Length: 397
Ligand code: FEO
Image (cartoon, rainbow, N blue to C red; front, top):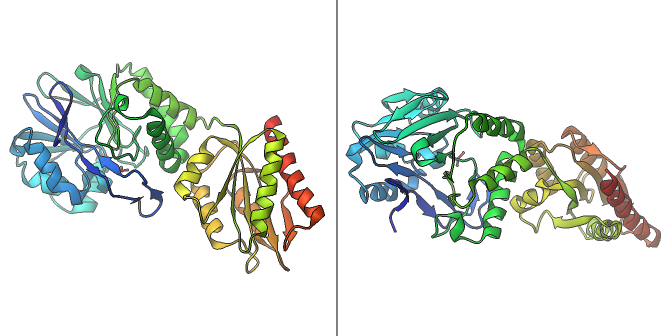
């Protein structure tokens, strides 16, 4: 399969990256790989919507050639500068002498700063259109969803929205459509993608969805730039984005810890028992054994977090420190949190965890609990009660 018809005269010409396991540097673990989606629209004038990651340029060109001679392309729509979508652009442009690149002003600037090559570039703004003949392309700027240059492309005749990164998933599969893959896996990848990439942008996402709704666009297919295309019920992923962007949560506590010799782990396990006995849902993750991308996904819908660490050099251990730094950038709202951990003499981990929690704008809902070396009989009970009391607060909060 080189290409796939997704709408009348519109072909998926993207590539499947089955093997990628780390994305955005090493900030995102892509356990199921990803795809770089590109769409070729045949009309009186021909448009290619987005290219792919540079190492796959020749595969994209082969896919385009399976549909038409690249020299016939009139427009290359660049919805987004990031290299996973524009990396193949310079190679494609060499084969498309008459092609105009279309994007936002920020896209023009960003592409120049990536590739330093001359392009015949047409800057577009929200509401601008390009007439291809029977089909039209309408552009909608989407700054900071998730880069300043980001843009959505809409084809009204086909009721097709191509929003680039928005509504995507890192999910490599031979199938292209949501009704062809297991729904549970698809939604799991969609929520992971949102949590790890878009979580801090909720306010902008809500505004953009409201703007789309006011534009009265009729959409029966959403074709993002990563993963599976939504055609069964595109409203489902839009509504899920609204819920995630509003930071809606359930009474669930995600406990994340790092332990040196097992004392903090023992505390964490006792606290989770307390949480469960309080009747609150809970999940426990050792930051050194669980995948960070998965933990962040688990946290998106959770009302509360507990962070634990052994003390080392009067501070928390380095991997929970790195995790909390990354969490700060996700800017969680309306959450509760508390800290716990073990120490040998000077202490320091729990107070530093509390400082990071407070600096992240998360409410510290219960003073930290620290335990010298291994919990004794009385401290064992206190660990359990600490979890139980926090669970009760979460349920009543
Ligand atoms: Fe898939 Fe922001 O690039």
